[in-house]
Amino acid sequence: DGPYRSLRLKEIYSDKKDGSAKLRVVARGDLMKEGIDYGRTFSPTVKHTTVRFACAIAAPRDMDISGGDVSQAYVHAGWPGGDPIYSSFFPDGYESRGPDGEDLGLQIGNLYGRPDSGRNWYITFSDVLQNDEFKFTRSEYDHSLFYRWEGNKLMMVVIYVDDALFFVDKGTDMRERFAERFGAYFPDRKSTR
Image (cartoon, rainbow, N blue to C red; front, side, top):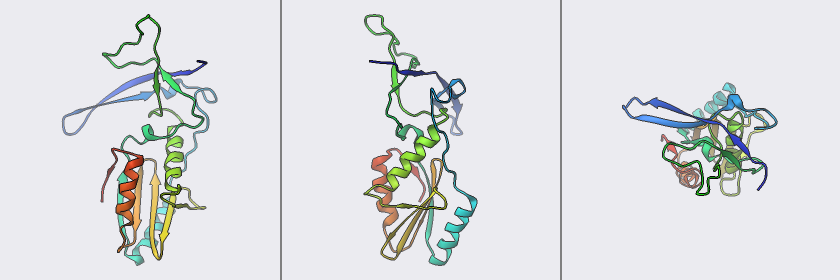
């Protein structure tokens, strides 16, 4: 039903330390054209001074500090504009032609390799942290720092691409409640406590 963009993809195989193999399908970002295949690419990256600031706040408050990673973060990201993106790439064993011989397209979302994937992930993550459920406030000075007060208890989240640092006052279950609700938005997350 209209002019849809088709992305070129490639498979990247890598061996893991445990002897297993990993396959990742990524977009061919090197073949994409700005203004046609993607728009804005800027995504904030945490400043070193922000991490030092969060540690300076955490130390006298004796806050718990933990880190986490969102597995397959870019795949969870929203798609600005909402236009469907297709690829003619089909993994081995899948047919690329329909029963009547027509070319099929595989509808895809965000992928690693797209120049704007980092930005799309940041927007999605930021929107979730600031929604009515989580109610974090984004810092005006560094958009990678989010904080939330519950009475006199503080929780800070510092994000760096798909990784995060969590600073939480002791004597509260804010981190546990956050992790439980966060998993509903981004399943299959990995985190360290």
